[in-house]
Length: 84
Image (tube, rainbow, N blue to C red):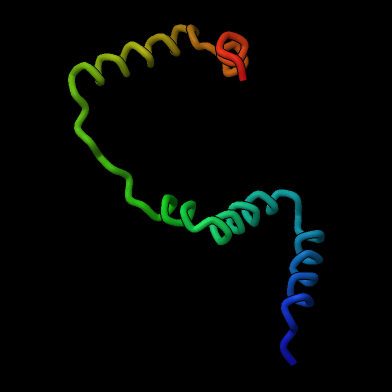
């Protein structure tokens, strides 16, 4: 006999409760994709490979060099400066 929706939901909760901790993030991600169709579309979308302009390429090079030199600004610093 098939389970009704209420029983299926309870069974799903029970399975989640006994799931190994390291597997919970994967299940959460799967559920998010199932609940949010846009997330599924974005996850399946091909990566666009756009040509970079010389200006953008130079800006990226400067940013990477700055990070390599340890000149990064933390998320917390940005929030302090610009508010949350």
